[in-house]
Image (cartoon, rainbow, N blue to C red):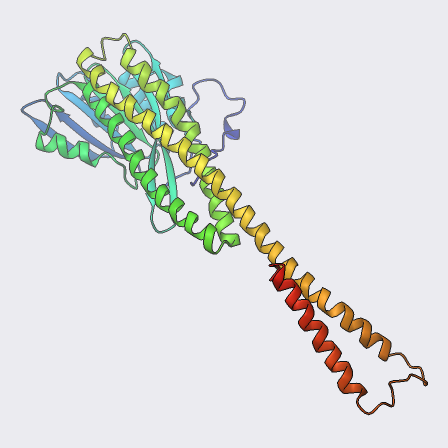
Length: 355
């Protein structure tokens, strides 16, 4: 998982509400995607001009403004003034190390959570912060980068007027965004499950140092997943219980489904953590057993050669008057003794199941 720890040292000592971007700096300008719609009309555009977003604030239609790339604090100051956003909200949006949370500012709700993606080429999980602001007739969503997201199904549903999304208000759009982010967790967990299955096979057949590295990498991923999923349960639960006119009662019914999915994701992560702990124990046991096998073989070899070395040491002494030194069959007799001792010891070890 890349970029787990964000640098926040540059914010130390600054006044509250100071807009400082703490994430990884992306190249290029911000990209703004605007969906302005109701049941019968749809206006979609892509721009990089914040001023175009301000013209849509008071329209009776539902407006979804998705901003990819949040490394331009100056542009966000303009957006905050136009939509009446509190400086602390904008500060949290630019501080990409936030834990999932829900805050009620009266005229709007602020939700922050993590969006996951999987890089198949590097076999890594990527975590990105997503901030969502729900107003009376608008939704603002902010993403760290511009490489892509999981919102394409929502965009297609808006374009094709599928389901209830064009018939409902901005609160239903927020539900749809939360739902697709949480559902995407299942896809990531499936990828992790596949990696765990490979590890289970590896650790029981041919464990290697690379296996240990993969185990620790997955355990680290599970720790950060757990850290960001447990608060999400509280966020969704509070959102469905939120006593705000911005969140309609019929939408909170759908949020129960998101809450149920969140619980399932958390339980799956906990299961994976237990499985990985078991795999680590099996790996350590396998390594110890392999080491014990090597030591056992070396011990057997040493034990066999001890009497042979003893006999060879005796006849290697430089005494002139040794009875067997001038015996014609002495050399062959010693070899016969060596072979007999080796055979007897091998038979004994085999009988004891040490070989």
